[in-house]
Image (cartoon, rainbow, N blue to C red; front, side, top):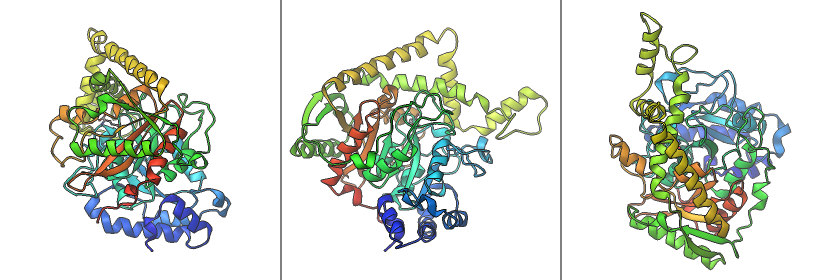
Length: 482
Ligand code: GLN
């Protein structure tokens, strides 16, 4: 048996029964990383022997934890003490944070082992992992295709069995979209559910951290481990964290499932629409009641998101100026030249585009026309969801309009790239939770993702609806032929 193929819950059972040790499991994952990294390039940094050592020195005290001894990969925008955290940007290429992100210390406390840091679009800005300064990650199902982004490295690593599970971040779809393209499970929790302390900020009113896993049980396990209030992130909310894994029963009888009509219209690939329709039929057969709902402001979501996210990014990224940390251009004549050249040489083209767009939208004379308008649209989008959740428990939709596109296909056409986020970004603007689970393949053998969306802080229902589907299908067991 190849240990690296295990899910978290399978590994945990084996470790507890003494059928393998954490070091053996980690060594198996390391072997797998070595075997597939050339083809996939999911990692920016691999922990290697250090991870085996971490596994060997685990204290048996944590043995009750379902994550004890389990190899997890971390998106490289999560701060890891002493371990390089680059955001796949030249400007942070050699940055070693002096502290751990809260999610990292929680996983450490639960006995998880870190296999390494995964590739992303530079500062998580992108949908394809192509804006990374570390090279492009490849889709394990077809190396000529993008794995999605920005958590493309995390998704590809999970799909390629190069870790048991991973963490990513989702500002406009960056967990769900790559999960969809790589045929795995990806969950964006409610805004405020998980502490962002130690997540390098992109757009602070939208960013959330969440799990990318091989199945829904694992997503429930990881969410439980990382969720909860943190005094170091004032936006994390102090509400109880349910015991997600024990709430999974696969029962959808009388569950009210809404289908946003705007999400199955123009621009959607035929196989994607069919797969979602089949999923609806399956859940209806299991006793759920399906109804059509409308999210009438969907058309404005992409434009509003790309104003708000870039505005926030332009402010968050002002700190990279060569003074305290990160890349510094040298030699320089004066301070201004240092700022200018450090940023010009340190940031890639997509990040620069967004800083310029965001600065423009916030500048006096344009603020009312762009930023304020976009905020108003955001309120309307939130109300759309509120109205839908008055009559539904969850919503079901495709995660992406198409399966994974080709590497190079959209990278020089930002508008096309941005438009591919149409089904994921509204969820961030409303702050609600959403999961993507595998629901089929297109005619070319590429995975299709199904999105389940829920009410604020109701991840339990979202996970359970996803679990109900997963239990009745076996898409999540398919692995790419690497
Ligand atoms: N693709 C979106 C963007 O480029 C979302 C990115 C994300 O969620 N980090 O902004």
